[in-house]
Each structure stands twice: as structure tokens, then as C-alpha cells.
Length: 190
Image: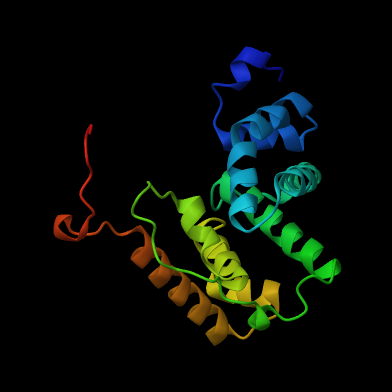
């Protein structure tokens, strides 16, 4: 069955995966168009520089295309390809020997919120230690379980759980608004 390029945009991801598994490059191109931003976003939240996030995302989509027949539709295609990307990023970091001991990662200098400007999640994630940022991103960005993260990072399960909890606690503290009484007055005009 042939589908026009404009018709591809109306298909559900599972239909596009089925076409891609049968060799439909245009169908897979539509999946890439739909999900590449979320994959690159996850990689950036995990700490990848923009160029590295683009490279790993491309590798993840290549791997996903080669393994389309393995996608069973038990979850979303987006979550599936983000898991692939997260695992590739971890492997690349480990291969580059930049993460010799994740537990030895230094804590950021400051975790105090800057209430003088608006914060977003990306800024808040940068305030976490590297291992906390990766664990939180894998858990809540890639949808991986604590056990999957522990296996991927070669860390004890309890350690992963601690990093996720500590990271989430720090994010809550950093992102929660201060009561009006604690805010600095703003002056309009002079």
C-alpha cells in the first residue's frame, strides 16, 4: 500500500512504524519529523551539548529504523526512541571515559534559586549534580524504570533511587515560587 507524503502526517505512529518496518523510508521520515525535538531535548537535559545531542539523536533514529520490526507498540514510539537515545548517550559517555565514577560527581556550587528571573526546567536541571540530572532525565524524560537506569549506568538500584529522589527534591525546592511576603519589592519608574 502506498501513502502520499501528505497522507503520512495523518497516520498514527504505530501505522507509520508498520510502514517503516516494511521499508517505507518516507513513513520513518515522518516519525523523525514528529519526535526528533523531544529526543534532542531529552539528551540536552541529560547534559549533552547541542552538537552531541544531534549526533546521538541521529544514531538513535538510525537504530530505531533498523529495529522497527522490534517495536511492539506496548508504549509510545516516542518513549521507545528516547530510551534508545538515552542508552546510546550513556554508552558514548562511558566509552569516552568521562564518567569514571558517577558517584564522585561534584555537587554544583549553588542550589539557591534566583528569584529575580524566571526559571525553567532546563535551568533547574543544570543545578543538579551530573548523576542526579542523568537519573532524573532517564526516569522522567525517557520513561525508564529505576532498575533499567541502574543496569544502564552500572549503579546499585538503591543509589539510583536516591539520586532520583534527591534530584526531584532539589528541583521542587528550586522551582517552587516563594510566598509574596518573601519576594523583593519591584520599583516601577524612578
